[in-house]
Length: 310
Image (cartoon, rainbow, N blue to C red; front, side, top):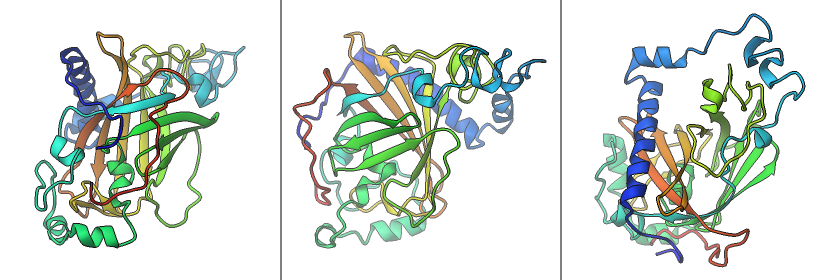
């Protein structure tokens, strides 16, 4: 077990989490075409006003005439920065201990995936020199871990994990991948969704986001706004440490939502959808929860190397 990981049950938190997940699962169903006609309607943005173009008002896409465009950091509708610790209330046998060989319950694997997973050997993995296969972006937030989230710059959100010493970068705006070989964490493009009630990134109305007339205030309060992250250019790895594979054709889509428990604890829920045409017969959709730690430092933050056997 990773030091400092929280495991608990909270009826209030579970209820709030279920509400978040219901909204996210519906959105993911639309995105993947499970409800094709509804998806078409969902994707329609409000008609642009006669003046001002896409942003609403005379300020156009970037916001009000006086304020001008905001960078993604300034426009953030929720504040995900700080130290967070994983809250593990489900899938204990997959997340807190090394799963048994052949225990693939819940993963929509193809026949090719089962062939690969049935060849898994923990001793060989430990001796392979590459023990980070289960620490790639599709599986990292299932690890019992602590996270440190900061703004690297005005357009890049940085996530560090103490488990495996991994670093993810979420790029906003018109960022383009520089190319190159696939990596464990891939290339991630981020956007704020649901800002000001105006569709993707808040375009088309309301306050805040890329299209609002007024600046968005970052908040520690729950919101209908989400952080959406899409990751590609991933190196193949494991969805679980017992050899359940994902390929380098994988696309990862995540939604981060902020919520507050009745106790006042601030948490975020991340809904994770993994699409892999090679090893998954359909999208693999799961969620993870993280509780915010108080203060600007975390004495329990102790980065550790990847491990293939715990």
